Image (cartoon, rainbow, N blue to C red):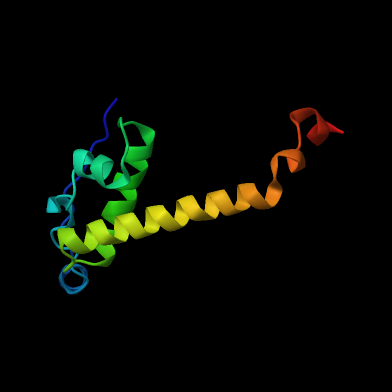
Length: 108
């Protein structure tokens, strides 16, 4: 069952706020990078949930940087991915293979 939308007229205050915040045409925003470009930037062999996750992050970046370019977005994407990969690796190194709890240990 799909959602139904009702076109409710905005007050002039709401309309002005939408324009001032840059959200007056937010639904028309096209992603600066497509899935293939994200996959290439992150050196992924296939799409899927990871690409979808980065598409959402990219859209959030775009909304936070309305004047941002595709090149700036690509730079941010690579830097963010690199730091998140590094952070995950650092945590794994800190925990070490012998420091991982098994599922049965959590139940005790």
